[in-house]
Length: 109
Image (cartoon, rainbow, N blue to C red; front, side, top):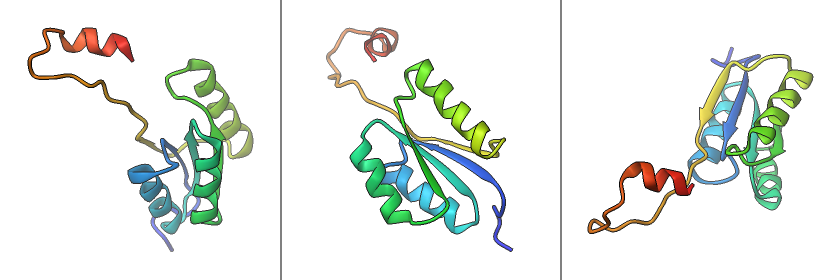
C-alpha cells in the first residue's frame, strides 16, 4: 500500500515548479490532489502531466472568496483535507539600499 492511499491533498501554486512536483509526488504516493493556481492553461497542463487523481481549482489564494470556493469544492467532492502543501507565493523586488521595512513590502502584495 502506498503511504498516502485514500488521503486528500491540496497544493497551492501546483501548476508549475515545486508545486507541480509536489502534486505529482503526492499522487504517486496514492493521494487525490486538488491543485490550485491562477492560470487556467497551466492548470490544464498540470492535469495532462500528472494524469489521474488530480483535480484543478482555478483561483488566487490571496483572495478569501477563492479559498472559500476551493474549500467548498474539496468538501463537496471528497469531504476532507488530509494534506496541505502551501506553495503559492510572490516576491517583491527590493534592493539592499531600500529603506522600506518588510511590513511595507508585505503591504504591497
